[in-house]
Length: 138
Image 1 (cartoon, rainbow, N blue to C red):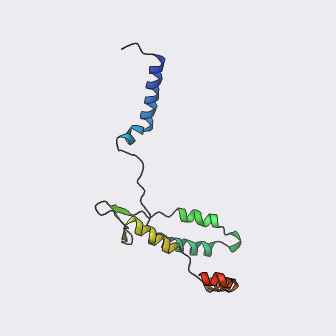
Image 2: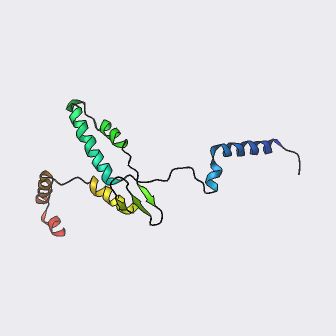
Image 3: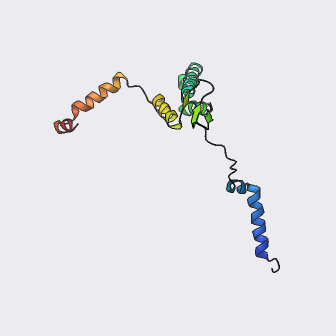
């Protein structure tokens, strides 16, 4: 073994910084980051409706902005608990019991906009203005 060099001191200094950052915990499977647990889609949708009606009632129409409303939406957190044995998520508030995929499907269905009469009229107008060839293809 030789004497300690400047390069050895640099390696020691770098390894001390790594220890301070908590990198070693990740190497040994002790990741300090929070696991991503989804919010309950049904409870979140209900809360969004409550926030929107309250926002519309309290704020004059001229002062309303989407950004303000979305900031209020972002504050909603209703985390679900994960059942590790079955890999299902459970909402303590409403009792929803679903897999991650089912939670995603529920969220997608709740976020879809309902078709209005105007939407149907626009679809019909679009269909009417198509050429015969396009209609036969569909």
